[in-house]
Length: 271
Image (cartoon, rainbow, N blue to C red; front, side, top):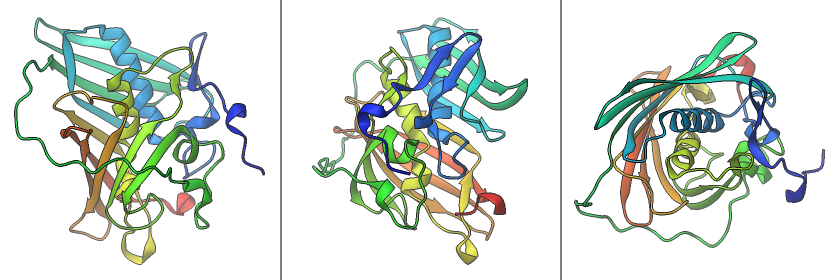
């Protein structure tokens, strides 16, 4: 099948519709072409939470997403709820359902926005001029259009999203998250956060693939621009479980971290 031209891409990762949202082909992940990538799942629930909370004086300091089952590309039920709405702190949650089944849920902690930024900043490598082309890798069958190859733009310092080993890769969201809306900085970071598992991708024993079941994003501050540098690596002390750890960096310095629990992928979705 020929790769769609950019002008033929859907207008966004999600379209709003009566009773929920509709995921477009830009949300498709590499495991199964009818199932969403974890990035859009994280992005969608960040949008739900931010819209429901509606607090410009607070910043999300911790955002945890649990992926309970594969989320199909199609019409989805969504909901969000503010658990606590205090003067300087808030807690909010969101969920995604399909045909009445809970597929993913998120919780978030919000604190007062940082005022005077302090702390030592680090030397940050510049953004390379050449855009990576994950869809051209001969060993990967990315759906086109899909999230990894089309919805995000990647600029590689070291490593790869298709080969085993740690990686250092700049990324930005290349399409609207929600049709007709501009994604906030928090929504952009949340949507990119699941990419750590691809940037730091590593095989388990016997060339089996790891797959993550959750994403925990910890933020010190919001990024200065749309570009985020993911410094990712996998750590493990057993043959079947691992954790991908990612430091998130913008053009000034560290903005936060991502942790992703990993297990060996079921056989039916092995690469």
